[in-house]
Every structure is written in structure tokens, then in C-alpha cells.
Length: 389
Ligand code: UDP
Image (cartoon, rainbow, N blue to C red; front, side, top):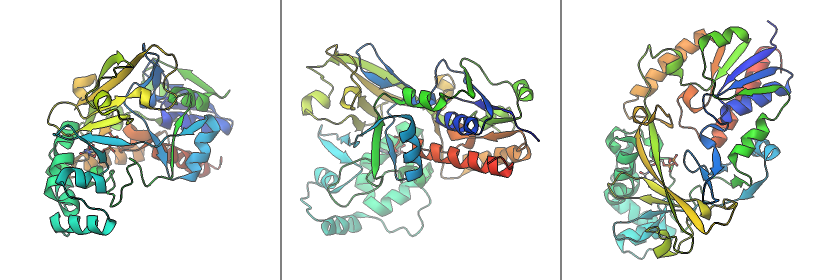
């Protein structure tokens, strides 16, 4: 088979990296996206306050993968940014997240000072569970009931509409546990950076190749496949197969923006506490999970208007938000994962024509660096299988 032209569905990170890698080998690549813009859920734009906001929630790039780092540096100028998050406690005080020595002191009133003391304290409050079967048991075995039910129970219910007992532990394991005072959100990743000119410009640069054509506001239709030798699709895999194995559920987010005078910047936690944290997570049982103060991210003020923008996130079912799919749901019973496997088996039979990519195509809760890595490896493998690499 001679490969000349390839269809890439979706102009997000997965689609863009696939398109670029394929175009570099001389293939003609047609990228389509149903939305009005490129960059998928990483899309950012400057709002009326002259502040750049990420339309689909805060995207903080972090990685320990040098191959991915080399790749992203080719397409944007990046600047160091160490993400720090605080949790708003019922008392109104702010405590570091992920949980560290200071978080434990803030909640318990203890005055722990050393890592050994933190370990001893956590050992005394944790519940011994040899093989935790869900997020509730995992957290109880690591941090005990009080910290679990304060920081994880209401937030997880809001975020996923699932109790911790029904949630796969892998989801809460995204937050590491610190026994020291380090208060960065991604302590395990050496590199934490943001693209100076934003993610839209970054993805635009990846797509900027003479072999790539882009059609926005263009929905995938099965008949399009006949015009191309192969298709890489970041489509929801269940949608492609017309939901014949049932729906793969997603959580979505409704974003509530608020504009304030920069001098007052009177968000509950911003103004009063004079903090410089760009994200605060809410521990309460209300509808919102977190709030982002966009002006606190570097290079996010492009025009001085004396106004700043805050965004609160209200998670919801994707069907209640115009089928905007953001987060695949990993339940403790593995039902959704098993359902996805049935779709993957269908896709395996179609592997001569189509491959599914990205968060929606592979139904995985992937970070940006993981999407790029998955895409780079996927294209390399695809090319070598066909003797094109
Ligand atoms: N989580 C929580 N409380 C927090 C932060 C996170 O319970 O204050 C749990 C929650 O289930 C969440 C998961 O940990 O969905 C992963 O959090 P992360 O901040 O990585 O989510 P993302 O930034 O991808 O939305």
C-alpha cells in the first residue's frame, strides 16, 4: 500500500503532533476539527480584561520526559513556572496542596517539624489496609480519615459525582504526598513551564507545515475516510462506533468567569490573604472545585486594563454541557475501562484504516506531556510497521 494522504481528526495536542510527525515524512495531512479553533482543550485566548485565560481550565505543563521536553521546545519559547495550589479550609485559612508537613500542621494544630515526625504521625492515624480496593481505602491507608475526608471527599464528589469508595485509586494518586515543606503541585516533575505566547500559538506552530491543511468547524463523517489512505482520530471512540457497546462517560466543567478591579482583586482568598497562588481548591460541599486567578500566571497579562479575571469550575456530566468531554471516568469497579476495552477490540479489527489517539480516542486521563509522548511513539510505530520510518 502506498500512503499519500492521511486524515487527522482533532486539532488538539494529539492531532497536532500526529499531523506534524506525518507531514515531516512527506505525507499530505488533512486536519479537521469540529470547533472554531485549534489547540483542543489547551486553547487559550485573551479575554476582555486583557488577561489570557485557558478556555477549558488551567493547563500547567509539567514533565519528567526529556524527549517530550526537546519536542515542545522546538515549537515555543517556554518560561519556568512553578505551580503552587492552596486549599481553602472551613476556617478560611489556606493550606498547601498536595498535603505536606505544613498542611498537616494547619489542619491538626500539631507542630511537626521533621519528616520523621510527619511519617510517625501519618502512621498513627492511617488505617492498615493491605490491598486498597478504591480511592477511599487507599487514602485511609496513607493519610487517615480526617485528612481524607477534608481534602478528598467533597472535592471528589463534586468533581466526579462519585464517592471515594466508587473511585479508582489511580485518580487521587495523581496528588503525591509530601513529608517535608515542599509546596509545589508537581514535585515529581523536574520541568514545569508555560509557553510564553500561550498554548494556541504553540499548537499553531506545531501545525505550521506546508504538508498540513486545516479545516475548522468540520465534523468527522465516515464517508471522509474514503478520501484518505488512513485516519488518526481523537474522536470519542464510542461515538465513532455509534455507541454500540454503550456510552463511555465523561465529566465536563462549566466555567464561571468573574471580572474584578486589579487593585481590589477581592476574591475570598486572593484579596484577603494577599497570596500569589494562581489556583485555590475548595474543600466545601458547594458546586465549585477550584478557582483560577489568571493574572497570577506569568505572561498572562497582555494589556493593562486594571481589571483581572477569575474563573471557578463547576463539574457536571458531559451530557449536561453540550457533550463537551473533558475527563474520562475511572470507577473502582473498572466498568468503564472494561467497556473501553470492547471498543478497543473493535478498533483493532479496523487497524488498517484507523487509529484512535488522545484522551477521547484512548479513554485515558492523560496529561499534556503524556499525550505528546503517546503521539510521538504512536507515529513512530505506525511508520515503522509500514516501512515508512
Ligand atoms: N482531588 C481532591 N482534592 C483536591 C485535589 C484533587 O480530592 O483538592 C482529587 C480529585 O478526585 C481530583 C483528583 O484528585 O479529580 C486529581 O486532581 P488533579 O488536581 O490532578 O486534577 P486536574 O487538575 O486534572 O483536574
